[in-house]
Every structure is written in C-alpha cells, then in structure tokens.
Amino acid sequence: MRGPHIRGLAVAVAVTTAATGLAGTAFAGPATGTDHAVAATGTTAASVVTAARAAAFAHAAATGVVPGDGLRAKDVMIDPEGARHVRFIRTHQGMPVLGGDLVVHLSRQLAYTGVTRAADHSVEPATTRPELTAAQAETKAAAVAKGDAGTARLVVDARDGRAALAYQVPVSDSDTTEATGTRTVVIDAVTGKIRSNTPDSDEFLSPELLDTLRERGETLNPATGTAAQPTALTAAGASRAVHYPVTATGTGASLFVGKVPLTTTRTARTSYLLKDPTRWGTETRDAKGQELESFARGKAFTSTNDKWGNGTVSHRDSAAVDAQYGITKTLDFYKKTFGRKGIANDGKAARGMVHFGNKVANAFWDSTCDCMLYGDGDGDMFKKPLVVLDVTGHELTHGVVDATAELEPTRVDADGNQYGEAGSLNESLADIFGSNVEFSANNAKNPPNYLIGEKLGLAQKFLRRLDHPSLDKLEGTIDYWSPQTYDAEVHAGSGVSSHAYYLLAEGSGRKTIGGFAYDSPTYDGSTVTGIGRAKATAIFYRALTRYMVSTTDFHDARLATLKAAADLYGANSTAYQTVDKAWAAVNVTVANTPAARR
Image 1: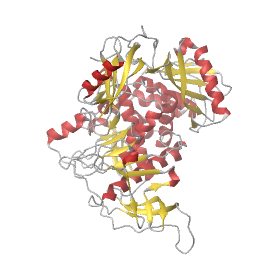
Image 2 (image 1 turned 90 degrees about the horizontal axis):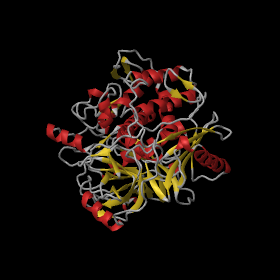
Image 3 (image 1 turned 180 degrees about the vertical axis):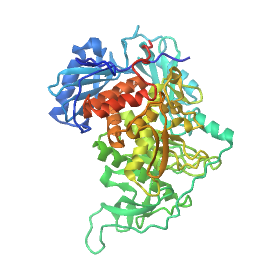
Image 4 (image 1 turned 45 degrees about the vertical axis):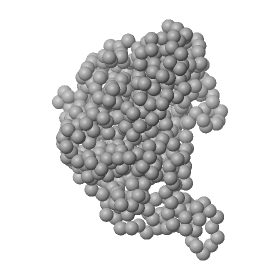
C-alpha cells in the first residue's frame, strides 16, 4: 500500500514573489559556489556549522527540530555571493532519523535565512520502547530479503508522514536483488510491519525494463570499436634514474569510445597499474566474475607496456578501459564545471569494478562498495559489458546525489521496481548530468547528445531522451506531470524534470544540435526559448546541492531551481523567468501544487 508523500521545501523568508509562488531572497552572481566537505578543517566551515546548528534550534517552528534532536553536518556550502548552507543529518535521542534531513540557509553574516527540510512534521515517535527485539527484527529481515541479516539498530522512521520507532537491518547475499547484492530492511519496532525493503545498489536497467526486453525478444549487441593495439605514451625515460611510483600516460583500446589516453601509475620499469594518481588515485579493478562488493577484493589491472585492451571483448582489459575512461571523464566534468573534488566532494578516488558477477546484464552504483560495478551482459539478451560513457556518468551521478540530497523512492515493489517523485527526480538528475558528461568529454566516437543509452544497441536507438521523453516506448517515460506521476515508476517518471531541463537549456520545438535532431513539445503549447546548457546545468546543480532533500518532488524541484536561478542570475533575470516557463511547459505550476500529504 502506498505511503503518503512528505512535502519537503519549507523556506522561511522575508520576500515573496507572487507570480512564481517562490518565497526567498534573490542573490545575483554567475558563480556556482564552492562545496566544502565537512571533514575539511578550518574555522570558516566550523563557524558556519555552529551558527547553522544554533539557528536550527532557535527557529524550531520552521526547522522542525525538537528537544532530543542531534544535528550532524553532512556538507557545508559557501557561495561567493554570500549565502552559506549546511546540510544536516538528524538523530533523535541518539537514534538516526530516516527522512529527517534538512538544509539550514544562512547569510554572509551567518544570520538565519531559511530551511529546506524533508520531514514536514514532528520526528518524535509515539514511543521509544520497542515491542520487537533486535534478534526478532533480524530474523524477519532475513526472511523478507532472502539473505543474511546483519546487526539491527533502532532508528526513527520519519519518511511515511509520521514518525515511528523502527529497526534498520542490513541484509547481504539477498536472493531478491540482481547479482545477489545487499539490501536494507526497515521494520516497525512496535508492530513488526515491514516499512521498507530496498536494494543498496542502483541498477541502470530496472527489473521492469528487463522484463519488457525479454517479452519483446530484443537482443542487444552494440557495435564496439576496432581500435588498433595502442602505443604507450609514457613520460618517464629509461636513461635517467626514476623513483617509483610515478605518473605515466598510456593508451587504451576501448569497446565504445575508440583509442583513448589513460593516466596510469608506473610502479617499476616495466610495470604499470590502471590507477590515476592525478585524480585522487581513481582505479578500475577486475571482479573476476564474482559478485564482489568489496573493492579491495578486486584484482588490479596491470601491464608491462602501459597499453590496455584491444577494442574487443576478447581482451579482458578492454572493458576496463571504457570504465576508467568514463569514471575519469565524469570526475573531470564535475571538477571543471562545479569545482567538485570527487563524487562525494572529499578529494577521494572514484572506483570501478568490471566483469562483475556471472552473466550480469546491468551496471550499478553500489553504496556498499562505494564504487561502480559493471556486468558483462548475460550472453543472451545483452551481449556486451554495460560500460558505455553515459551509463557511467548516470550511475556516478547517483553517487553525487547520495552525497547531497540523497533522494529516495517512495516505495519499492516485490520485484525491485522503484516508485515515487523523489526517486524519479534522482533518475532524472542522473540522466541530465550523465548527458553532460558526454558533452564535457566531447569524444568523436561517442558524440554528445541529449539521448541516454544510445550506444546500447536498442531497437528504438536510445533508452531515454530529454527533449521528448515519451518517445521512449520501453519504459513508458512521460513528458508532463499529472497527479498519477506521484506513484510512477522512477525511470518513467524521470521524464518530467528531464524535459523541464531540456526546455530550459535548449527551448521548445525542432532543432538540430551537434548532428542530432530534437523536437521538444510543451504541455500548454507555449514556446520556450532556452538559456543554454551551461546556465541550465548550473541551476540544476545548485538546486540539487543547496535546495533539495531526500523527499523533494517535482513541485519542490521547481521551487529549488527557481531559488538556484535567483542565487546565480537574479530574481528578475531571463534565466529565472525561463525556469518558471520550463516547469509550466511540463505542467508543474503553483496552481497545481498538491496539498501536503500527511
């Protein structure tokens, strides 16, 4: 049974713009700002956190913070135009609060200006005394997830419109998850009801899509490169003494993006490691056909000549070339565009493992491994590894979302399909920034476009597209919001915000961009003139990192992007006005904002 959604954006402000329904203070300036990981030392970040925590308790009526709550800073963001933002994870009487996250907004002078909160209700449960024991919860979780239960811990579950005492139980080797992965089960500690049972990894291809492809008898055997064996381009010379390890430049023959340079680590005169020391030690390893969720257990890729792969699946390194290239290009996009240092903005390596599992036809962002996992295909429906560039950009963006708003589906069915607007928004952002990775890489073998999965070999020539989402007939992606969107499957529902983003960037109607033809309709027949991909992308990133929380839905996202546009370009700017028009063109407006569901 569907649980009620929690409306998430509550900004306390002094100025209201009636035409848009957005309450907020406008900040002008083109920069996207700097995100500071809270682990970073320094009095500036510490003073901002202290001020934000004090403000949260001082403005409890707006923030929802109650006695017994604890606030742990997850992220600190300092904008060049003056605003400061602190994302908090909440506890209540020492117990983690699921759906209790909030972002406190401050001025340059550290005065409180507003809050964005996930739970628009009290997070204090009716009781803190469980009727179930931890052992009973573990047994129940193991049974429902068909795996091995870990240690149960008491939490407050505030995601369902009211707060309840619950047990959160990790389950490994689950038979209900593709490739026997891990799941997290939340059980009501009083009634024993299963409140949620979700996979810890995010699958690129949903169970519903895989079933559709099987029903259609569709076989995916995408064309791969025929690049010649690459020539190493190592910088270190043999004529002088070298102290290892050193940075080297090799080349890889990939499956999908041709012959590419790879920054590697030279560990001896004729020994190289597929690990990039210039990008925080980012590395790709071999899962050896096992269902590994520990990166340390993966086998390192090594070479004697810094040449990797042969452009075909006959060479085990070829898939690793695509993966390493895709991961590094995703890191480059986020760093060059937003100054983001790594997936979690903590200056740490991104990691991937190829050849994951036995005949796994999928790719995953796995929060347990904190890495990308790539299957080789099942040899039947999927003939090749899922290592294409926009798949990597999409999945690593889920890691960015995990590190920021942590958008979650409203529910997950017995087959593992996810539903709800916050989950749809998560998928949409992964598509939006995944396509931007292609534009950033600008690889002639993988021309950038607003299509997702165009190199997978599908009969419809793409998996999803941002300009006209409903042209996707496999997942039934939708163009416009309606009340039914609330419970749409997340990939289908993603079309609403993806379409809004495309309209904001490129506008409505027919056009050809980079050799690709687009024709973007609008709900009301209006004409939208785009502001350009760079500005649109900056607005959506600012909205994600500052103004979205775990329960943000499409109407919340509209407000978040309006606030971001005001921050970056001003509340009277063309960019701000176009944000409003783009959302109206996908039927997300002030007038049809749903009443709070409690």
